[in-house]
Amino acid sequence: MADERRQFQLHRFHDCRPGFGKIGQYRRSHIERDYLSPEYTFEFLKNKLGFTSLVEKKVVGKKVYSDKSLSIAIGALTKGVTVKELAAGYQIFGNNGMYYKPYSYTKVLDSHGNVLLENKPKPKQAIGADTAFVMNKLLQSNVTHPEGTGRAAKIKGLVVGGKTGTTNDHKDRWFAGITPDYVGVVWFGYDQPKDVGYKGTNPALLAWRSVFQQLPKNKSDFPANGDVIQERYDPATGYITSTGSEVGWFKVNGYLPTAPVDPELS
Image (tube, rainbow, N blue to C red; front, side, top):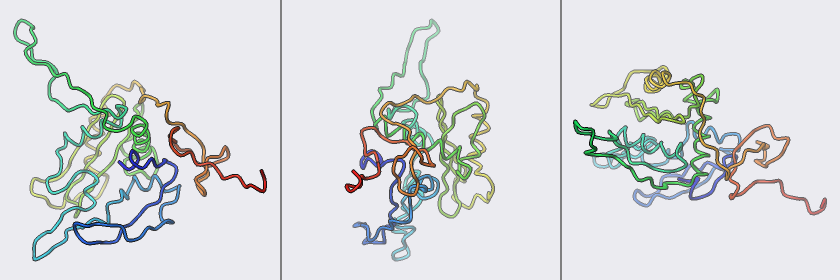
């Protein structure tokens, strides 16, 4: 993940739209520094996961050379991932970055109550807990923000985070959603891919919501993280300031953007 490897902060980063290089030797050709200013960090999560520059249905000799395109953001490569695998991937954002291999049962008992089989998954630290926390907040913002693509997943009494997904030619609709206690992923489409013909609210999201709105409204929240702090910042500069009009989450051990001190004033 970019956040884990590059230590970017939630308040600010620049979008890059790499040009098309040689297939197999993909490389950047230019960076648009003014495209994604601080106030558009949410926009990046919402619509522009940074994969638009990969080859989209590149045809060579009447054969599809590569199907890598926007759908790479939700795992839909040549073979892709299953719904269960995608749900397993999203669990790390609510588990402090810990990954648990998914399973279909906890125990198998005989007629006398003796345990014949038992699942005891061993967790793995997939990403840092602070990174998982920041991603969790981004997913929540996609539901709570008035322009978020996942805003229809909002459920009174539940803390919800989630991300929608749409593949090329409207052949698939996805929604991956998390709460403090559960994670669920829904796929909407056909066995033989074709336009789902659904132009309204994401049907996968609606199916997810119809199930999750039946959960107990216990108002529990995701665990806090002491390595991430919430601060106000100025969206025009990205600098932390008490008078900032926006609120963001910042890694304590990362780069905390503060306004440079003018030596003539110090």
